[in-house]
Length: 303
Image (tube, rainbow, N blue to C red):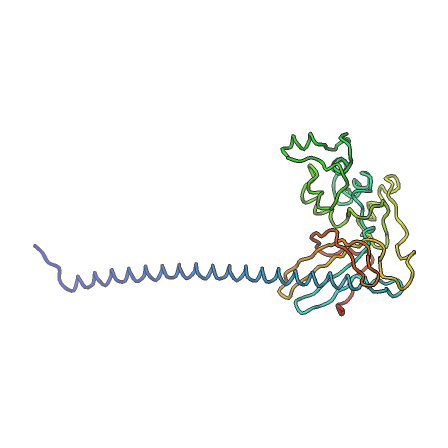
């Protein structure tokens, strides 16, 4: 029987110990990397949540600023909008316009809707079909327009609902119209309303896209440009006091988080307080639509 020399045994033990140490160090490095990654992800999520909260607080501040300005008598023809201003948590871009600056998806005929879709880049036949489906969704009958869709079409598509067969209550209902792509609905939202109750469009506050749509088929479709609301407003009255308005607020926090809303409010109900009732709120962006010749003002005081 042979025996190992003590020196050989010690060398083998040292080799095994070294392998164990290397393995333990590698394991600790992996664990440390995982902990660092989780900490990084937690920090990112915390920053995102903090940015979202700060952004929401900024948007709410912007809405209050806009409502306060709308309650004050205007000076001359100026409404005081758009407004760019800075608060402690970030910068606000605030705009307020009458809803007659938008195309009403209830009052407008489908030719006007098709014209808007064409302006947004939809090809002619598809624009006409989408417009017919919007019209079928809101009308009270079951007759299918050419290219449109009624309840049977929704059922065949596997949906558990059909057209509302009533006027749109909110613009977000466009997402329920059969066949309208989500990206198209998102593209339409900045230019439409469900609360103007008129085919007329106020050119003083309308966006270039709305003006282009009205110009394409406006006369034939029964949609026309109206005289600006200011033409009938007495000097010293609150801006748009007798009509619904849409307030668009875009907020950018100090950390760069960007968020915004477009909120529709009813007419001024109480002359002294300037109270308005909120009708609809949706995501706004990337920024309030301004007239082609209008540039954003330099940042000024919010109040």
